Structure formats: structure tokens, C-alpha cells
Image 1 (tube, rainbow, N blue to C red):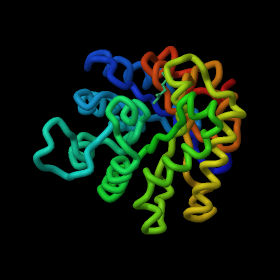
Image 2: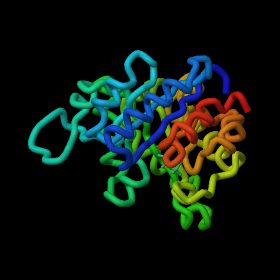
Image 3: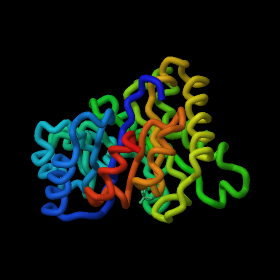
Image 4: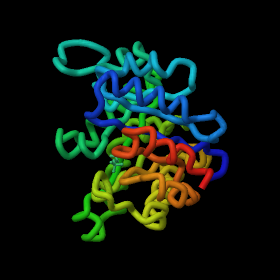
Length: 256
Ligand code: 13P
């Protein structure tokens, strides 16, 4: 894993009310020592970002939103801007999650605008990519990942610079919420491909610095094997990030 500090990120999706969110952060704070050797991030719903930020206090837990619009403000009913996310204390924003791509029909082009806007405003994007089971079984996994990278990071390619703080998350759609985890070998193969894509489109130094997370049915009992692979730099966790009992063992994967 080299010098890359693992990032363990909890994507709470459309779950947990304000009290449950605050209680979960409280339990995480009680459960961590600060010596886990990982960065920890939580991503509540928009409406709970402010209370979660208060609850995080000075614990060092990072805060991400699950989506944003690329404009700073204006007539975009129902949307949230990067400035608003910064204002409530977010450092990161998840972009292009497969649920946004598939259910809300977000395209890589749209995600690209968001990733550019987030970076320009000082938010770190966590850009998600991943193939469906049909695409994998047709032998197209690598082609799909490459297309999503080319499209979702187009602006960075155009200017020839991808900030080293950018986070990528490989989430095979067939492994999300299904209990089917990609094997550590399957995940490593794609992560290596993504890192090579960064080298080819930017430079080896950027490629060696960027964190590439794995997401899809990560649990306490498979985290350490996944994280043991050289190009897997952390996890984007859905279901198992909703309770401290399930999330803490992932945060503490190095103890296994
Ligand atoms: P699960 O961990 O529930 O499979 O979800 C993964 C995910 O989509 C995280 O963004």
C-alpha cells in the first residue's frame, strides 16, 4: 500500500435520522483510538450533515456529502452546491455513485462537471466507477471502467492535471448490497488497471499518490484481505457502515 493512508469511508445512503446519525458518530468516536492508521469518513444524507459535523467535533472524522450540483448557486430547485457543502463542514463529496448513474441517469459527462466544480471549490471528489454483472460477463469490465474514467475525469485530462488528493472508488455494481464481494484478486486486477490508467493519462507520481477505494459488500471479515492487496487503498462501505458494531471492525482491519 506504500505511503497511501487507507481511507475507510461510510456511505450511509438514504438511511439514519438525525438522532441515529449523531448516536452513530458518538459510538464511532468512543470506539476509535486514533491509532488505527487510517483516515475515517462518514457520508450522511444532506439534511444531517450539519448535526453530524457538530457531533464529529475535533475527532478528525472526515465528512462527505453523497452528491452535489456543479453550479455555485441559482435556479436549480432541489439541488445543493459545493459552497453549501463547504459551509456545513464537508471536505469530500461522493460523485457518480452507481445508484446515481443507474437510478438517476447521471452520465459520466455530468459527473465530470461536478468533479471539476468540486475541485475548483476546494472539495475533494470521491469519483465512483464500476461495471454491471452483464458488462463483466460479456468480458467488458475493463472497457467500461476505462470509458467511465475517460468521461468522468475528462476535464482533468484536458488540463493534464489530476490533484493527488482525488479519491477514486471501484464499486462493481454486482457487489453492492448483494453480499457478493469481488474477490481480492478480482478487485486488485481492476485497481491496478485504474492506477495504470492514471499513469498513462497523467504521470506515475500522481498514480502512486491517488487512493483507490473498493466498495461492494465490504464487512469486518473481508476487509483485511481486500486491504492487503497492493492497489486497494481503503473501502467505501454501505450497509456495514450503518452501525458502529459493523463499521468499527472495518476501521480496525489492521488488527486482523
Ligand atoms: P454495500 O457495502 O452495502 O454493498 O454498499 C456499497 C456502496 O455502494 C458504498 O457506496
